[in-house]
Every structure is written in structure tokens, then in C-alpha cells.
Image 1 (spheres, rainbow, N blue to C red):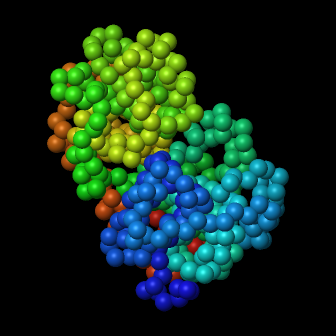
Image 2: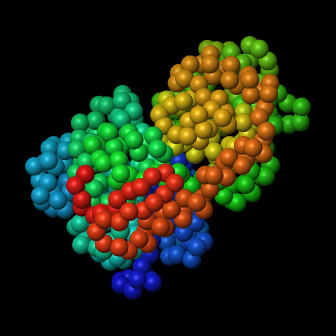
Length: 426
């Protein structure tokens, strides 16, 4: 069925998969919030995989795109003939990200369904969404969203070796101005995106990730079947995230070992990833293996947060991490690195929890010990976390989606002003 009637046109959310990362959880929260407000919503995925698939309500249909290998490289050139010279090297000579292999089927989806809006998250998904709209000739509004501090992310050794390091900035500079709105999940991400890709800062609006809702608070009440949370047990320090370089859990382990030298404590790190064995080996080397548990990924980290003594974010870089605000919503004190970017905005420069230098395990240990000795008021933490509500983020996204004007529109937000002209100069 083709959807030409405006009332029947869905809002589509496009993301590679529903693995348990922050961007994926944010998009799922938005989808649920849009549906709760009575909008037709569709989830468009490159791959129907990930732990969060089971969290998608039955009322939100999902579509899995088909992959195309041979013609996907040419599709961006067709979508932007005028940019042929600037696109030729990155598109034809470099290794394409997997997301672009789904570009042609995304184009078919936009032609067939004509959604009112396509909300995209993550860099190559954003590019694919914009190219697909051009190929489809669809009247769909496209909103792109950046969830990471790009310049820092591309310094990671794994990323620096691939084609993104050389080519992503020019692509963003050329293609993102086509979007009806460019969203960054923190002011730090917005500032970095503007500098990194030479985009006008006024084109970028900050909308904090949708983090806190009634569902989270209900999940926080669920009992945790873990012996370390028994009454009278030593305090539990909690970390959560992908077990990858970005999250810098080795610094957390070293800080925890220093805390254990002063007092009895336990550490739980929720998540899975390539660094697991390295972390287990480091815990043995530090002599704290029996006090550290890596139970893997859980769909309900909030029950752990509600019972932990301190939550620690040890990341080397972020965009706007969900977990500090989620932990505060559960009443859990937070210690975080002052990494680029997001934690300082959530904790308001250290007002709601200490910020420590990236990679400084001694400072982190001191901050953890301080929070164990003098916990902050939990209700004050909950009140701060409420400012990162799903409802607030959903409203701001819907304001962008239903801004039906043409030409340059100016939308006023607490975090600044953006211009949403389509295909303006960057």
C-alpha cells in the first residue's frame, strides 16, 4: 500500500540494528514516545538483530532492508551528480561502510511508503538517508542525528586506519546541509561537528538523548538476582557499556583496585565486547578478580543502578552517554570522566557528581571513595535526571518533523537556534 494521504504517512526511524548501544536505545525510546502520542511509527533496520529487538512494541512495525553489493557504490554519485568530483574518491576508491549497502532498498522504501519523516542516527545512516531521499524523489523530511564526538572517535586506532579518517568530514560537509534538521545529542557534539565538518553552527540543534521515562523507573524496581546485593553486603560499584576501547574500563579496574586497598567493595561491569578477556586478565593482575563480575549484557541495567552505591562512567570519549542520567534517575550517585563530550553537561560541571580527568585512575579512586563516604541526596539526583526525559526529547523532534514551512525556518529552543533550509550552503 502506498501512503499518499498525509494522515497515513508514518514517521520512520532508521538505524543499522538494535544492538544495546546508546544510540539504539535512544531511537527505540523515541519510537515508543511517538507511538504513545498517536503517531504511526515504523522502525527501518539494515539488520534485524540486537538485544533491543525484543523491546520493540508489537504496535510498531519493523522493516529489514535488503543488502546490495554491486550497485551501492554508484548510488551516492547518482544522488548527487553535482558533487561527482568530491564523491568519486571516497565512494569508489575507499572501503564502503556496511550501511551504504542498504541504500538502494532504503530508496525503494521511501518511494513506496513516502513517510512524513525519516529520523536517522549515526553518521553513515545519516548519509544513506539523505542520499536515499534524493534518489527516491520523496517529499519526506529527513532529520539526521550525531551521537558521538566525531573528531575524538576518529582518533581511535581502529577507526584511524579506515577510510572514515580521510573522507567522512568532506562527505558530512557536502551532504548534511540537505537535511531538514541536523541534531546533535549534546552541545559538545554540536560544537565538534561544526568544527570537524566545517558546518555552520547555527545549522545544528542540540536535543539531549531521550533517557528517562516511567518504564525506566518501573524496571528499576525489579529485584536483582545477584548475591552481591544481599543486605549487609559490601557496597557495589557499577559500570556499564560495550567492552571496547572507548569505554576505558581498564582505568575503572585500576581505580577499583585502589578503592579495595582502603575498604571492602565489589565491582560489576555490565556489557559485552572484544575487551572482555583483557579486562578479566587485568582484574587477575590487580588481585581483584574475586571482587569483580562481568555478567554480560542485560536488558535491565536500571535494577542494578537502583541498588549500586556508585555508578562510574570511565569513557575516553562519548557523545551524550545515557547511563549517567539513567543512574541518577534511579537515585544512584555518579562519578564520571570529564570526557568529550556530554558528562559535564549532564552533571552540570560537577554539581551533581565529580568529574575526573580521562585515564586518571587515582583521581577516579578518590572520587569513588568520596561518594561512598558521603553519598549525595538521591532525590536531588532524580530531579536532575528528570530534565533528560523521553517526553521532552520527543516533543523537540516532533516540532522539527511537523515544521511544514518552506525555505529558511528559524526554530527557537533553549539550547539555541537552527536554520532548517533544505540544500542551503553549509
